[in-house]
Image (cartoon, rainbow, N blue to C red):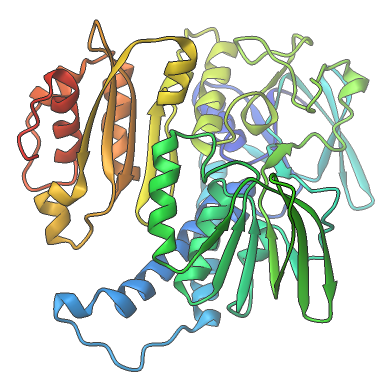
Length: 465
């Protein structure tokens, strides 16, 4: 049988592409090397990390904030075994849901590792069994894998990746996190809330170095309240394990050499495109110097029958970006007109307070020489935030100095992950700051902070500050 479409990889890009193909009447198969669907995001990334982030925040709230609400708690303790069991249940039910969607849409699942035989044929290896499968179109959606540091070798026990960090059976006394990006601050905050001493070592001069500078600086202040410490402008030069202790050596940019000892070291310096074993060269598919599959604006590789989406191509490594690319790619294959605006892909950090951003940062606007104006509103001036004892952070609107069109929105505060949706809609429809400022927002809500920030950007007329 020759399928209309075969998708390699069942992560958020792959399974969504497969479903959209089936909706459009294609015969579809999906190849996945793992027994469960959902890829890194559902199994070892987005979903399990959010489960632990929520559980640890509940504990932290009970330990440190319930009292002010008039709620007395005694005998509070962490049951890490139950916390991990709940996380596993969340993952299991979510991946089973994807399995149901494959059956519902009559998508054939093929278990095994795929490699190209030619531009329309894939070899799938499952143990000792090898099979061939043909398709008119093939989408590569194999995602990404953790980046390793040459000077720091994983042992899976004391020097670990994010995958092992989501399955610890004890709360670390001291956890060193190498990397102050999204994964590092999220997992670092999980264990800091549960009582670990957490040290983040970051090569850049701040947390979240790819986001608006103010967000990283504000998040640092919040995480310090959890007892987390930070070593910026520092390059890790090595790590070794002796018995149950790991020692990290590093060099500060000023020239000073330091050593830090902990019982666990989490390496969270980013991810790389995963094309291992695909045999791209056999089909003549080009990849760039970083191993990412090269595509045109329609996700098509240099081989007409082969496409690629998600973490395996250029752009931010985000689950929702991969999913939208999957839909757009399949719709293009089907002859439909597609639209995907990369400037309106939001980024979210699920610490507490949460961090969310869309559009251009101040640093990017300055570098591009674009004149802009700023409107900010602190959550401490929000009635809903004060009522919730969640007054950290701010909402910031960046608008074009001449046209008032919104160029970027950056939020650190309660429920920023939900609030950023309004910002995305506004930017997608090229709204002005005045447009957002004139929209009626329910009171009291966290989203009023966005309205007030927009009013501040329009002509400096926020109401509540």
